[in-house]
Amino acid sequence: NGGWEEGFWLLEDVLNPEIGGGVTWDDILTDNFVYPINSCAQAVDILDKREVGDPDMVRDGKKSASDPLINLATHLLAAQLNFGAGACTTQGVLDAALAAEALLDEYNFDGTAGLVPKKNRDDATLANELAGYLDQYNNGEFCGSTMP
Image (cartoon, rainbow, N blue to C red; front, side, top):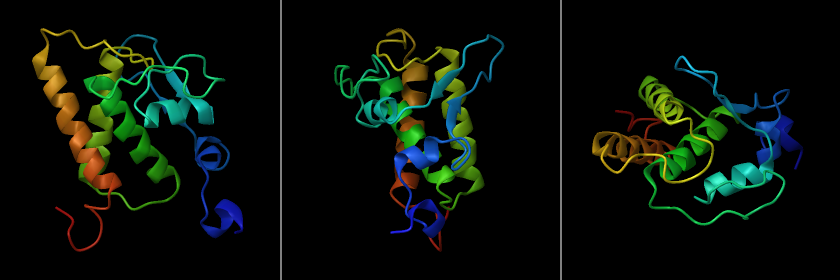
């Protein structure tokens, strides 16, 4: 169909820094942790709400859909893939994506579940709220005449 040059994007196109810009959850806070998402297998695990194990193997991690950070990572990555493919954005969506990345960075999210302490309900609630907002964006809610 002409590939990305004709508007037909593949996951590997967006993850390629030279084509779609790639995706790296950068160190927003003051530590040195950076989490690059540089393989389709790794991205598929995140999008499927699975813990990421060996980045060269697809679906080797257990399903962790109820984990707030895994859920947030899914919707953040989907939004960033949409950004990389040239989808519309709003300032609210960009702000939510930045807040999501900052929250993941706070816990040095590395694709595994169980990082949000059970006693930190505020962060779990924030993760779920941001995930819901980004999910709405990923489903086309915030572009066009229905933009909040």
